[in-house]
Image (cartoon, rainbow, N blue to C red; front, side, top):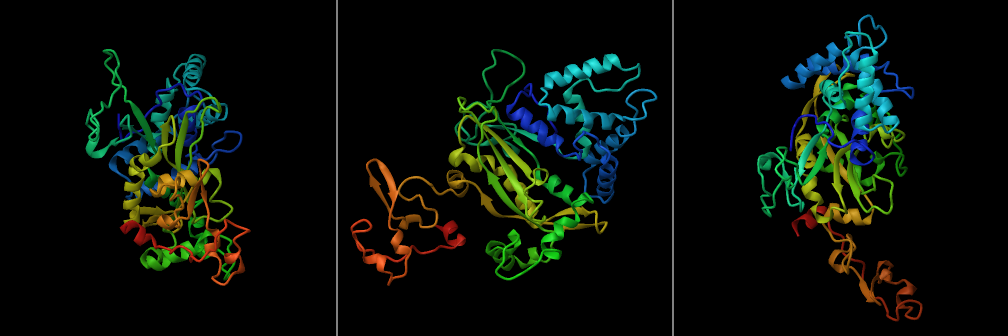
Length: 424
């Protein structure tokens, strides 16, 4: 059911969502190629500073205190190399790099507990290991979804047993078993804490100002998204947002893929990923800086229901646009961090899901809208009339034989502002 706490995975983790989530949670820790966590003490110090600055909740503080204690506890009596925390992070590295299932992880823990000297403090399961890491403040929430994608069982709907729209049961028929199993589940990775981590870490905090303080600015040359027309137009519309270069500009990307690598299986997953463009151009598209926000499990594309799944991320983004208190490791002080989506990144079909404009049929062009020039030819829709974009005195406008047998007299479609599109 929907929960604000970190959840263990119900599946064994063989491919699919489970493995994808395991890797996402694990990537919240800095590790080198050999699985060593030498930078873990620095990471804990940085998070401690953020907690002491007063930007964390009481629940987070209690869990973080326990995390610090686990970082100092010997794995077994007189073990000098591994603390409990370091062992768990290193073992998770092995799990992810070798695609180990949750069941295999549990079996290995059981074997190690039996092998190590008396007094060892290993967790007994993958769930127990992940619970120890909860103090880091980065986890995920499992949110139940209506079978027909009408609504999320979240916030005002969290305690409902039926969909508020279609009245379909939230639960599968479980033949009298006590545990209720939801019809469909979505994974949500809270955005606020992940953006705050970029400022808590001494490795990334200076880079979050790079676009303003270190970028080479030269008119008519685009080296970074900050040189784009869209970025500059946003700065003009929201000058208060622009005053602090630490405020985060994001891109939102989504697409479906088959998590099983089996093309005969039509099942797909839809991750929603955010890209922080404050970073240098050579960093913001690297895997470790891409922020997974949502993971939508589906047998097929979400279609127009995508906005239902996006609600948790949108709610976070609304709060972030107004600002949340965040610790800056560079200045050693708190500031009001704001964030905004500048654009979306997707192929044409997913663009239709995100924009709400149908990208199929006779009016498929999201720029021309109702003035799209299209024509049905032998069961297919073709998009004609490209000559209307030429200058009015261009010779091709009158060349009937070389095109569709007509003279083109129309002007190009009217361009609409985003505000006009929203109103109509």
